[in-house]
Amino acid sequence: MRIYLIGYMGSGKSSRGNELAERIGFTFIDLDTMIEKANKTTVAKIFAQKGELAFRELEQAELRKTFKRKNIVVATGGGTPCFFDNMKEMLTNGTTVYIRASNGLLFHRLALSKKERPLIKDLKDVELVLQIKDQMAFREPFYEQAKYAVEALDLRGSDIVKLLVKELKDIS
View 1 (cartoon, one colour):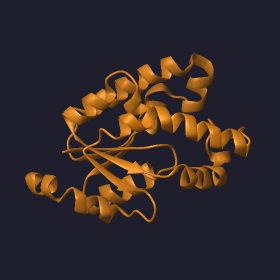
View 2 (tube, rainbow, N blue to C red):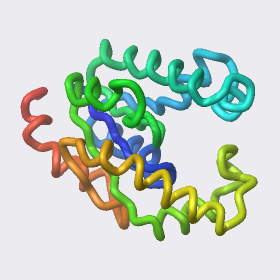
View 3 (cartoon, rainbow, N blue to C red):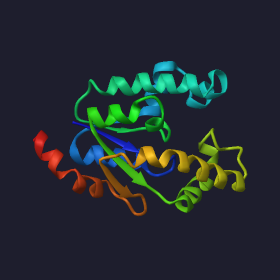
View 4 (cartoon, one colour):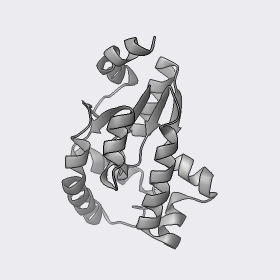
């Protein structure tokens, strides 16, 4: 079984994904980390040196590698479902869970962690608000295709497990 966590940056995909994987005995994979290891550089440097399209192609290649693995929880990048046929492939090859967060919650979380996030570290608060609003307007239709959706506020890995009981029974 493959579980793909999707949602905007700061929604909790990595932290809740790691917790979920531990709870169910799966391997946790952060897609951005896979990309960085495979390319021996950071996501920020790939964006800066090669541009977004090149990054999205690398991202798709790493995503496709996960389709060959079993018993994994994958935290995707915020834009992963929105490019090429990534969302369709995740729906075909695994179970997708959208971690939904309001624009306000995303702003609050991201404003506090800008320094750790190269793609937003130089944005002023007003610019960050506008970026979240604009990107969510584009990305939400992709995110909404997920099999499940959970609210990010106060989300725990056990909340996702409850949603996946049927699928989890199928693998035991």
